[in-house]
Each structure stands twice: as structure tokens, then as C-alpha cells.
Image (cartoon, rainbow, N blue to C red; front, side):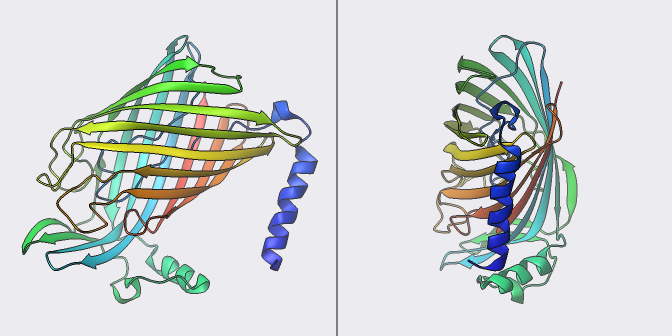
Length: 336
């Protein structure tokens, strides 16, 4: 074991022994509120799977979610070529309210920034340090914004100007199938309706109406030091015709997520989560468009009180070329 790994292992074990004596004081473990941040996917209403425990009557929950994604892929075949080089920052205000026992309503209001960003040099250095392939990014202009897709000699997509603006707003709801807050096992049926409020030409939105329906569940186990939680969800999303690669857009996709977490102390939890979905586009031989995707997010939660917490995570593309190289995820959460 290398010295940094020894130090990390020592800190984790020490944390458990020093802070983990009271299971009741362990931090809540909930899924990361993130999804695929590819510029050609985040425009749709792909939902985060959310919590399996709904809010009680009169209770409110608000999150400010920030996803900073660095994209670089340059791919082609005899008929097609695609270049996705840029950086996107997505701010989302996610608010929910318990309207009565077992029912809640919510809204997600995103604000999207598309730009050349500032992370290219850091990502190249990171890849060099760990021996990861650059995939051609070291030969491309740094901090450039250019999303371009050409098929059969026709340019079907080009975005090269930085922009910012409102994304596609979503309204959502949930019904508690069983369990709930404080129960070891819970499940909820959730739904979401996304409206075409963002600019599709700037890739702030898709131009489509998207309706999602999914089931999410979780199970919690007490252990000697804190508790463990397994969570997951799966469902389908239907979409009307949008404005981005409209002739190649699919009208149905499946999606899901699976993860687990461990909280050894009242103020911290460690989490790992995989998100996945089927392809959003058809009539292409490029993985960036017509291939299923899986992303892996690793990080945790810092609980500052019973009401305020912070999620921190880093997302990598498990299936390369189908999602950004790296996404930095942050989410402030408050309950009222």
C-alpha cells in the first residue's frame, strides 16, 4: 500500500471508531442528485432518481445543485464526425414540499452556462499524472467551445458561442408506496414533467416535452459503526419531438441508478452511485449518440446539522465517449 493510501485508510478507520458509537446520530444517506451532463443529453428531462422517503405533510426540502462538466471527444466514421469540446455548468434549484401524508410535489429550475471553461489544463495534467490517455485533447485548443456534428456531408449541429440562460423547468411528484422517514426500508413512485423553457439552439434545453415515471427504493442496515444504505431506482421517459438533431432523436429511453453509502458518524457519509440510460439518438454509428451510457459518482455528504448538508462528488464516464470525462458535483440541501 502506498503512503497516501495508508493515510486515507487510517483516517477512515479512525473516523469510525471515534465518531461511530451512536447509530441514531449517523448522517442520512440519499442518492446524488445528478445525471449525465453530456451537452447532448442534459438538455432532456432525465431525472435524478431521488429519495425513497418522501417528505412529511408541511415539510419542505430545497437543494442548490451545481454540476461542472468538462467535455472532450473527437470521433468519426466514414459517414459521420462529431466534436464535443467545451465546458458546461448547470445550476439547479430543486425544491419539494409534502402536501399530505405520503404525497409530495416539487419543481426543478435549471440555469445552464455553455463556455470554453478553464479546466482543460487541469484535466490534461491529471491524465498525465495517472497515465490515462488524453484522447487527443492535448492537441486541441485549450478552453475552446465547439460542439459540432456532421452526417453525410451535412452539418446538423454547431454551437460555438458561449451562452448562459434558463434551462428546461421540470415539475415532479411522488407517492410513498411503503416505508418512509425513519423506516429501514422505503419505496416511492415518482413522476416528472419537463417543459421546453430553455433555448435549444444554445443547448440550454431540448425543445421537447418529457414525461418520466420511475420507482425508487432503499434499505438501511445498522452496523457496529453507523449504518449502511443501499438505494436504487429505474423507469422510463417519453419525449415529444425536440429541436436538437430532431430527425435522430428517440421518443423513449430507459434510465436507472444504483448506489450505496456508509455513515460512520453524524456529520459524514461516504457514497458511490452508478447512473445509466439507453441512447437518446438513433441512425448513428457513433457511441456519443447511439449507445447506452453509465456514469459513476464517488464522494459523500457533510452534515452540518439535522437540517443542512452538503453533497460533494466526482463523476467519471464508465462507458467512454457517452458522457463527460469528468463532472464535479456539489449540492447544498436544507430541510424546513
